[in-house]
Image (cartoon, rainbow, N blue to C red; front, side, top):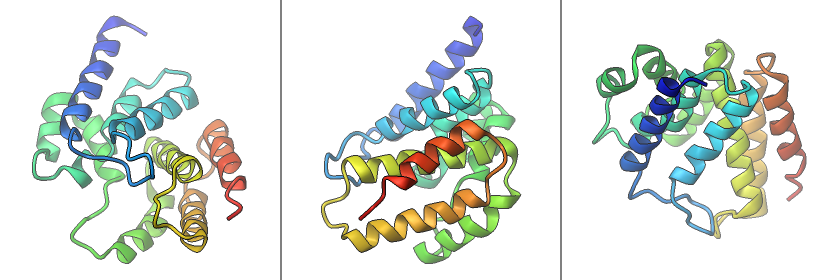
Length: 180
């Protein structure tokens, strides 16, 4: 990968670390949120052979509009990372003004209509979330809640299938481990 592309990826990592600096994961380990972002970016990079820096950058930034709307907006992403990256991020962003159940329902409904890049990102994100639940689940999550999350994530990913066999296999492997 050429130096300019590597620099853009590092800029995105720096931006994501700044934007999410106060945020922690929900899991028992309460690790820094940036760990989730780097896992999703790693999965996307592996799925694309490292050949889609725009998607890797979008993976690092995929939660900034949803979780950091007080500090980050679409125009800021366009200005810093370009319209293609900002559009991918916007595609996978939930509307936080809606109730959680509605946001989850809409993810299932919208999944088949996402762009190819957004589908790869969505599958990588769900794969990372399953991994977190398997490794360090939130202390207050019962086996039933974990099962429900796995079932819902599978519904979302089912709408994204057919874009990248490798990332789909990663998701399926993690899904198969969810015997709660």
